[in-house]
Length: 74
Image (tube, rainbow, N blue to C red; front, top):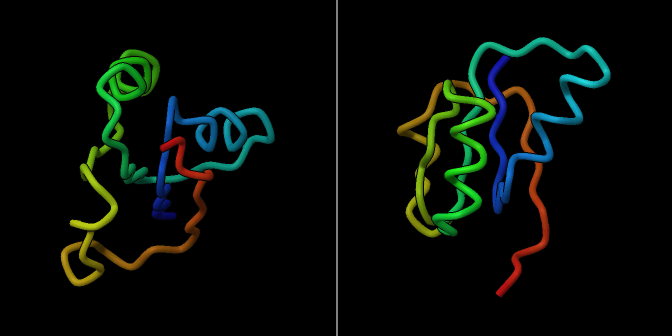
């Protein structure tokens, strides 16, 4: 399963998926805050960081099975 998280923050989506036991193959994250990205990469080093949501292009990603997002902080 491929996951796309927009405005990923510290990757609460991965925390939730892991807590309920949902397995996934790839986790793509759109986030620009360097501190949030650092926390995510420390806890989930396989996360694929995509940068700003305005630069995410669906045609550059594999089929996404689940997409979610947090409310932008700015």
